[in-house]
Every structure is written in structure tokens, then in C-alpha cells.
Image 1 (tube, helix red, strand yellow):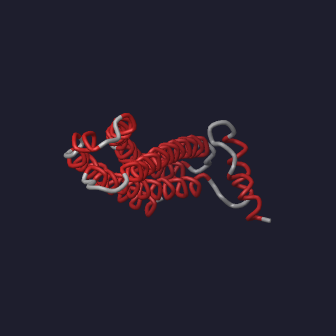
Image 2 (tube, rainbow, N blue to C red):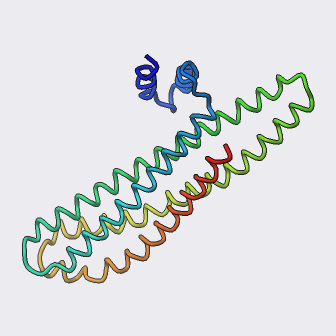
Length: 210
């Protein structure tokens, strides 16, 4: 029963029915702190997947621009498919980062409200101190998540240009004119992967302290 309820509430959107979602999750034992931890873990996983997808797309572009003989259409379709996977995964990353931000915002609002309910001044002060510390740690994580997210768009734009150019000019001359482009994109991919890895490490640290 608990598992079926979890599956049911998982479909609820945080953007439009936060209260219903949180209420349903609380009934099966998930407080906002638990949901934030789950959201951060999910964001970490989506970023790992994005790094792999972008690297795979670059590999296919390198194979295409180094193409000698064989079916150009097949090689192009493989690269185009990898690019589309990157677009999809980038969307998943953006969506998960938004969820992390939303749950954190709602958790902090609830925490602030509940601090005012303390009778003990010392307990309230201690809770307020912990809230401040958690906010600082989350701000560091959020900055890192958004920085990693931002590294995806420049690479996507370059991949998109290659796909469109080859769609309109799929021949040996077009392939030749794109040689060297993959090397340029490689630098952006490395920056993307480095930022993703920093963000993933920041997520690990935050999860351990939450």
C-alpha cells in the first residue's frame, strides 16, 4: 500500500500543487528534508547521465568528421540521435535543478515558521543557527548546480549547428569543412565535465550534512 501511494504522488507536479504533494509524502513518512535529499541525489544522477550523453555525442561527431567511405547518412543519423539525447538529458537536468530549488525554498520557509513555535528560547536559537548553516551549504550547492547547468547550452548550440549544417549539406565536402570542429567542442566538453564533477562532489557533501 505504501509503495502504491508513493507511485501515485510521484506524478504530482511541485510547480502547481506543492501542498498536496507534501501532504501526501508526509503520510508515507517523507518530510521536506527527506524530499530535498532525494531531489539532490536525483540531480546528481541526471548530471552524471548528461556528462555521458555529451561525451557520446562528441564521439559520434569525431567519427563523422573523420569519416572515410561508407554510408554518410548512417553516420549522420547516429550523431543526430546522440545530439537529440543530449537535448533530452539537458532538459532533465534543468527540471531536476528546479525541483531542488523549489523543495529547498519550501523547506526553509517551513523551518522558519516552526522556529517561532518554540517555547524554549535556547532551542529556538539552536534551530535558527542550524537553519542558517544549512542555508549557506545549500547556497553553495545551488550555485554549483546552476553553473553546471549553464555549461550545457554552449555545447548544445554547437552540436545543433553541426546537425543543421549536415542536414542541408550531407556530402564529403561538408564533412571536410567540419573537420577540426570536434576538437574545438572538445574543450567545451571538458569544461562541462569538470563543472559537472564539481557539482556532483558538492551534492555529495550536502547530502552528508543534511
